[in-house]
Length: 99
Image (tube, rainbow, N blue to C red; front, side, top):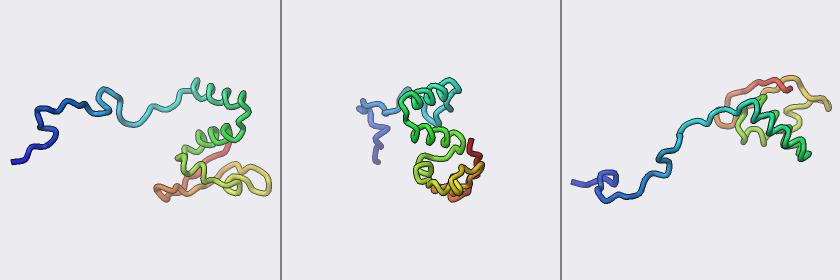
């Protein structure tokens, strides 16, 4: 009969996530979103601010956000009001409004 590691009486190490919350993280609060936006504006990080706002609008994953092209969001030099993007992970189209 074999004993598993969990059944071993001399095991002294604890799991890395013992006592920590597991699962999805809670969403950002309005105050936290405002704080992030202000810090990006003060630091003149226009690209990061645009990506942050787009992430909030679209709820896309980071890999899908950084893969976006200008042509996906603009037409003839003007920003589109709506965009449709194919998610890389699921392959499903995501339609969102650009504010």
